[in-house]
Each structure stands twice: as structure tokens, then as C-alpha cells.
Amino acid sequence: MRVTDYHPSPGKIVCVGLNYRDHVAEGAGREAPEWPLLFAKFANAVIADGEPVVRPEGTHALDLEVELGVVIGRRARRVAVADAMDHVAGYVVVNDVSARDWQGNKAALRDGEKGDGQWLRAKGSDTFLPVGPVFVTADEIDPAAGLRLRSWRIPGPGRPGAGAAQPMQDGTTADMIFGIPQLIAFISRHITLEPGDVIATGTPSGVGVFRDPPVFLEPGDRVRCEIEGIGSVENPIVDWTDDPRPA
Picture: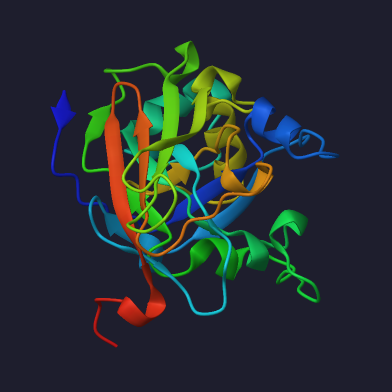
């Protein structure tokens, strides 16, 4: 069964870094992790399809990451891998927006700059998790079989290629290093997952920071993330001075 007009209100958003083999490979000198690399976002980051992603004051290197979001349907605490899928309600498409300079990525740093030393601000700032409007139940699709994930940057007026979608990422969930059952088992060993919680399961290659030259999102651009069988989420980029939300 497919449910539209999805309005997420997760208590927890657990994100997974470096979980696609091709994404690990595109970052020179990186090695695949031995266990899932976890970080968190909070409810302040969640926005809906069509709402603006706000580029905060102080960052110049905003990037996109299309990801499969796993929505927990049943409380998961110390769950075995074999039982993990019993706790999945379904799936959504998410965009793990990232400030690459704050994250400390060398390709995004200007002379004299350095990263924060951790990812909380770089990954968890306001509006940094657009979530698609379509929720697909777990019996509808099988991520282990391979779902195509794609993303595009659509340059704004006055920029080269204005209005034309620029392909960025094009991968498949079959490239995951740690599958959904392994992720749920690993996370729930120490962090209890509750109904409505979301796991953002990582991103494939093609992100802007690893392109030559790097490609970053600018105010006036639009960004679109799509997953086969689920749908898409598309959002405009605005500058922090044009943030439409009340102070």
C-alpha cells in the first residue's frame, strides 16, 4: 500500500556515512568503514517537498546527497539481523544536505579555512533534510534488489545552464556496504528506535564536492532527489537573508 502526503515527525533521525562503495571510492584515500558510521540530524532539519533549503550564513559549499530513508514502524531494541525487517514500516526519499566547508572537506575549503571537527552543524542545520511526500510501505519494494537513486542540480536564473537539470548522482541501493537489516541491528544494539524514527542510509557517488571542479548549490538553484519506486523531493535554494521562516 502506498500512502501520499507524508508528513514526517521523527523523534530521531539516524544517518549513515560512507555506506556506498562507489561513494567511498570517489573520495581519494578513503577506506570502507568496518562498521556503520553514524551521525544524527534533528527535527529542525526536516522540510517538505517544495520548501526552501536555506544556505546558512558563513558557508559557501552547500552540497546534496540523495538517500533512502527507512521509517521505523515497530520499536526496535537489540534487534537481531534476521528480525530487523519486521521493524520497518516503509521508505521515503531524503536529501542529506551538507555544508562541505563546515564538514572539513579539503576540496571545499578556502585558504585559511578548516572544518568544525564534527558534523553536527555541517549536516544538521535548519532545512538540511528535505523529505519526499510519498511513503511506500515495506511490502511494496525491496531495496536489497537494487533501487535506482538519482539527483540533479537545476541552476538558477543568470547562472550557466540556467533551468536545465544537471545530473549529479546515479546509483543503486544494491551498492550499500551495510544493508538495512545490518543497520537496524547495529543501531538498535545501543540506540532504541521508535515508530516514526528515520534512518538515512547513505548516498551514492556523484556529489558535488568530489567533482572537478567542485559543484556547489547556490541561492536560486533547485535540487531534485529521486528514488525508483518511491518518487522525488525537489527544493529551491535560498540565502539565509531570504529565509521565509519567522525569526
